[in-house]
Length: 270
Image 1: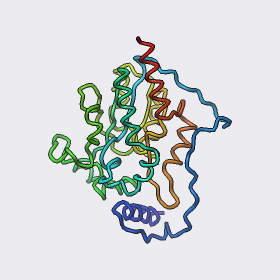
Image 2 (image 1 turned 120 degrees about the vertical axis):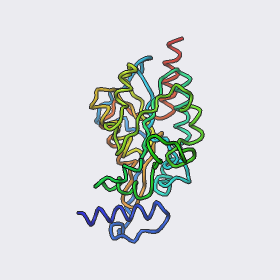
Image 3 (image 1 turned 135 degrees about the horizontal axis):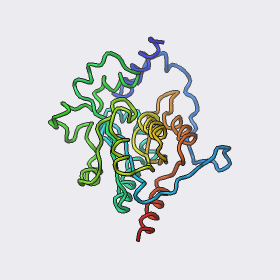
Image 4 (image 1 turned 30 degrees about the vertical axis):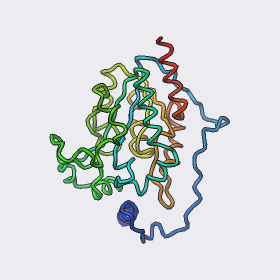
């Protein structure tokens, strides 16, 4: 099992930096990947739904950062195809715009690694990979040197929304979920109990945030085309995540549906 895990890390790292993988783990026929094409109305799984209420609802975005969403980011080699297919970059901006227009609070849960984090004695497969390729690296918790334009920084197009003095940027999560940061505390202190969740990446940080927020008693809706995931031979992170979004979240919406629902809340207030 240890050998297999190491092979996975080496194979993914090779793909991320643009080198072909020769790992025997991927020396197999590439399976047919069936992409999500929308929720089946006849699926025998309830859709509880969420009726957004002003003052209770907030937009939560995970990792809207260059290393995931910029073609120059270190993970673009494995997530870029999924980002393009879903129009993730554009859809996230639509969510930021709609939330700000509707007066809905926005929270960003970022992913940062500081030098002391690289001293960890163990980690899971993708934790090891992220440390290896310097993903989300910063010079230190109290330093911004080299941050602007780095892989840990936001996409430039998101900065007007995130840096407007109103968006809450939480402390960083360190693995995938918000258990290690203050997101739940910040949401509760703001009176939020309904979460519209989007960001990167689908089967890692988004799914982990969904699970923990559900356990913490929040209503959670996932915006399924405002996220994306790694695609590798034999692995489609987005498809894997969507199954759990559909089985666990209160509902799944497209960006267009979400924007419409935000606008409806705004109209009700008027």
